[in-house]
Length: 331
Image (cartoon, rainbow, N blue to C red):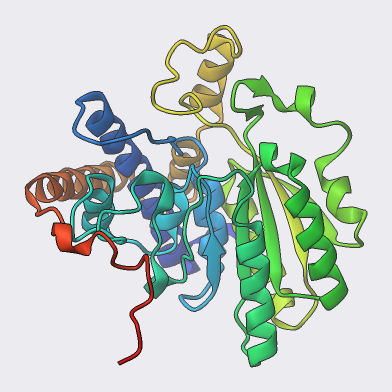
């Protein structure tokens, strides 16, 4: 089969991946505006630029497979199947949010789609992900868990404890390190000595490095590793080379003291995962430019509609203040 014919045979998969990346970008654009307009409480950490990582990996997972996320977690949540309305409601503290408005930007969880939750603690979800993989093993399930974290989290001791356990017990977990080049305001190569993948290899964990801006490369690797993890060949470690377009958080606007403007411009102009994948889809005659424009327009409208809905949605009752905090007493 020629490359062009093979590409067209996977048309639905490719278009779904493209839409999911566009959905993440649209969500983040609107989340940023909600912060700038002082409608959203607290801070948010933008995922724009890293869309190929979340989508490439989550497209290889089933609904029953689990993920754990980070403070920069909107992209993972969308990629795993979350809806705009419930997500924007959560950001605005509304009752219809995924956590009834109590989680906010950094603690969204979507249990129905296997998202065990974002975590504001750097590296904090590593134990949760490894525990989920252990649970699947003990219950005889075939679920795979993917643990998303940033390059800065590789300095956390918890990572080494859980990787040791996962390697000893051959747990079905994939540790996905999104290396966006910066740990908050410091270049990664200034805080991380040696190779990041070598950290996992020290435990005998098979490790890979992949271009995190190439959704097809990410998806191909993830599909292979997920299938192998289901067969008991895990754990695995992936370092995904990517880039965040915004600052560490939405208030981090003047970044020139730690990150040059021409570097940002280079990534946005030549390494954008959505634009490059869209061009590839056109080159392979899978879609036309008009179709891509239509997809972007429709998703932008869906996001704006969801924001308007969330702004009008109700806040939770004050009677819910201890809901999901304390276990109800037995009758």
